Amino acid sequence: MLIQQIVNGLTIGGVYALIAMGLAMVYGILRIIHVAHAGVYVVGAYAGLYTYILTHSFILSIVSSMAAGAIIGILIQKYVYFPLIKHSPIISLIASIGLFISIEESMRLIFGPYIKSFPKDLFKGEYHLGSVVIGQSQLVVVFLSVAAIALIWYVTQKTRFGLALKAVSQDIDTAETLSIDSKKIISIAFAFGSALAGLAGLLVGAYFNSVFSSMGDVPAYKALAIIVVGGMGNIWGAFAASLAVGLIETLSIGVLNVPLPRNSLAFIFMIIVLLFKPEGIAGLFKGLGK
Amino acid sequence: MSAYLITILITIGIYIILALSLNIIVGYAGQISLGHAAFWAIGAYSFAILSVKYSLPFIEASVCAILITTLIGVILGLPSLRVSEDFLAITTIGINFIVQAVFNNINYFGGAMGIGNIPFPQIKGKMFSSAQFMALTYLFVFLTIVISYTFRRSWAGLASFAVKADEIASNVSGIDPKRFKIIAFAIGSALAGLAGILYASFMGFISANDFSFPVSVTILAMVMVGGENTITGPIFGAFLLVLLPEIFRPIHNYRMLLYGLLLVVMMRFQPSGFFGEKGIVWKLIRVKKS
Image (tube, rainbow over all chains, first blue to last red; front, side, top):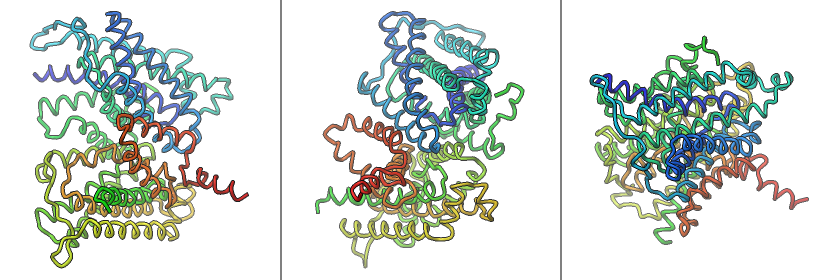
C-alpha cells in the first residue's frame, strides 16, 4: 500500500517536473512569473488529443503537442514578454495572468466546455510487481517524463546552447558583448520549455483520460509553489521540489488522511520551506549547477 | 432607485475600498500582493462569526473584526519581509489558497456550507434599508479615500515611496524598509477587513468560494488597469471591472475572454494604466490643452 502510494506520488511528481522545469527555465532568463505556461499546457493537451483521434498514433500526438506548445510559447515570448522586459515584474505578471485566462477561454469556446477523453484503445492493461500495480498509462507517463528530463539535463549541461543559456540567464548584457545572440537563445529556451509544457499536458490528459479547458488552473499555481521551493530560476531545484510535492500530496492524502484539500498542500509546504530557507532548497543542489 | 442599481453601487463601493487598500500595499509600498481576497475573507469571516455565534452588536463586531484582520495581516506580512518581490507574489498566492482551504474545511468556520444569517446593521432596533446601507458603504469609501490621501502626504507615505523606488538607497538614508512595509500591510489589511464587514453584512451569507484566488487577481487588476500609485486609478478600475460584466451580460459566454484580453492589451500597450503617470487619460487631456 505504502509502496503503491510512493509509486503514484513519483508519477505525479514526474509530470509536475515537466511543467515546473520549463517554468524555472523561463524565470531564470526573463525573471517573469509565467502563469500562462499552464495555458501552453492546455493547448498541448488539446493538440495531442485531436492528433490521436485523427491518426491513432501516440508518437504523432507527442510530436504535435510539443510543436503546438513551442509555437504558442514563441508567440507569447515575442509579442508579449519581450516588449515588457524593461517594466516592473508586476506588469508582465498581470499580462501573463490575462494571457492564461484568454488561452483557456479560447480553448473552451473552440472545443466546448465538456470533458473530452481519449479513444478507448489508447492504454489498457496493467502490470503486477509483487503487491504494486502499475497501469500501462502510468508506465508511459513515467517513461516519457524520465526521457524528457534526461533531455533537459543533456541540453542544459552538455551543449553549447546550454552554456549560452547559462550566460544569458546570469547577465544578458555581458552575454551580448561576448557575441551571444541573446534574443535567439531566449526564443529557443522558450520554445523548449513550452514544448515540455505541451508534452506534460498530453501526458496528464492521457493519464487521467480527460482533457478540458480549465485543466490548467491547478498546475498554473502549483507549479509556481514548486519553483519557489526549488529556488525560482533553478531547474534542478524545481525537479527535486516537483518530486517532493508529488510524494507529499499522495502520501498525506492516501496514508495520513490530512483533512485539507490536495491542492493547498503544495502551498503549505512552500511556506514551511520559506520560513526555514527563504532562498528555497536550491542551495542543496549547488553541485548540479544552475 | 431600483434594488438592482443599489446592489451594483454597493458592490462597486466595496471594490473601491478593496482596490484602494491594495493600492496602499502595491502602489505606495511597492509590495506585490496577489492574496488580497484572503484579508477580505478574514474580515468577513471574523465579523460573521462574532455577530452570528457570539451575537455581538454591529459596531463591536466590526471593531473586533478590523483588529483581527489587521493583526493577521501583519503576522502574514512578516514572512514576506524575508523574501524578494517575485517570491512575495507567489507567497501571497499561497496565503490566498491556504486561507480559503482553512475556511472551507474547518467546521468552526462553517465549512463548505458557509455562514448564513449574518445581521444587517440596525439603528435603535430598526434595520437599515438598502439605501441607508449604500450611504454607509460610501461613507466608508470616503473614509478610505481620505486615508489614502493622508497616507500619500504623510511621512510614512513618503518613506514608503522611497522604499519602493530604491530599497537599498532608502535604507542608507535612515529609513527602515521593514517598518514601512509593515505599516502598509497593516493599513491595507485593516481596510480590506472593513470591506469584508460590509460584504458579509450586505450579503447575509458568505462561503469560502467568494474569496478565491481569481478575486485577488481582479482586485489587483483594478489597481493596475486604473493606474497604481494614484487615487483616481483604483476607483476607476473598480467601476470598470464591476460594470463590464454587467454591460457584457448579453454576450456572457465571451466575458472571461474579453477580461483576459483586456488585461493583456492594457499591460502590453498601457502599462501604467488609465490614470497612471503616463496613462492614456492624462495624455488625451494634455493634447487638448495645447
